[in-house]
Image 1 (cartoon, one colour):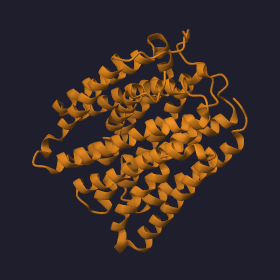
Image 2 (cartoon, helix red, strand yellow; image 1 turned 180 degrees about the vertical axis):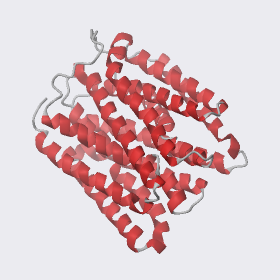
Image 3 (cartoon, one colour; image 1 turned 45 degrees about the vertical axis):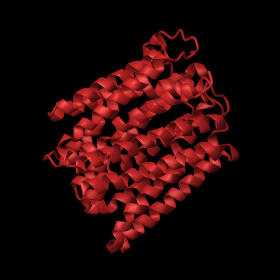
Amino acid sequence: MNLKQPNISLPLKLTFLIFSMVLNCMGIIIIQLSQENITYDKLGFLESFKDIPIAFISLFAVNFISRFGTKKSLVFSLLFVAICSLILPFVKVFWFYKLWFAIIGTCFALGKICVYGIIRNNMIEEKSLAKTMNSVEASFMIGIFVVNTGFGWLISSKYGEFWKFGFIFISLISFFTVYLFSKLKISEPENKNTRLLPDLSGFGKTSVVVFFAVIFFIVFTEQSFNSWLPAFYKDHLKVNSFFALQASSFLALFSYAGRTITSKIIQRFSLGKYFITCLLLTISLLIIISIIQFYFSDDAKVLLYLFPVIGLFLSPLYPVINAKMIAKIDREKINTFTSLIVIFSSLGSSLSSITISILFERQLLSYYSVYILSAVVVIFILAFAYFRLSANKI
């Protein structure tokens, strides 16, 4: 199988597009439900109903995928997303959002492990992995752009009260992607794993532990933007919901550009140096934003245009460091390793949303950029340690 073939790359990219839209509609839901007298502390914990199932299910997903195969598992997860998105517009109670996100999180855990497994089973060299992963992950950014722009237009239109019917569009794309996978034959390595829990032997080395810490804080930082930037724009910069969502869409657009450009040029550079350069540029932008926010508050509206640029340099971090580490993992262990990536990613996302919700609840939004800057500095320290240790093999 060749991942460059359109019949394979299209459904993989659509899979990430779909999961991106359902995972990152959190920003829209936060804005809409906050207008229905649901407090930010409750909305902050809503993210946990998505992320905790992701972490928990990932422990058992490897066994499930081994039993049913990568393709069937991926189709199963997409079908559940399609059905749940079809139902959502017709349900009005808040508890259903918790259930909905729990199901979405479970499906994402399965889907991401399957997609990473397909890529790793057909790639060997780390720069080729980085190129492919940035290309596929770029569609994740497009999903954020589409969901923010599409729902933004719908909310601001005369049909704004029917905003939840936008999820039917996601349902249709999911059914179409299932159809594409049904036409494909995906070769899979024979796997006789019958363990209920995955075999974690060999993943306790210092370099691996530091890698997972880096992944945790990257997602921690990304989620601070993806779910809460629209609410920050609306509450702190006092723009309307439509403009808040559109401005946030540009973050996704810059992030897409960052990953797409990386997929084109990454083979010319050392992955470690490229990663650190992107980090330094991200830190520089956040310092500028913090200075403007604290010392030039009259010009704070310029933050609407500066925050999205961060996506250009922040977005390549996750696929680049994943590619560098995954290239060292035996193919037999790739599903298990991906499940651990999913677990630490979901924990980073959940903790990020909870702590950001505290900033909102206590009206501490002036420290929003400083909070994110602190997380990026932690990534820099951990990444420096990781690249020093990465010469050691698992």
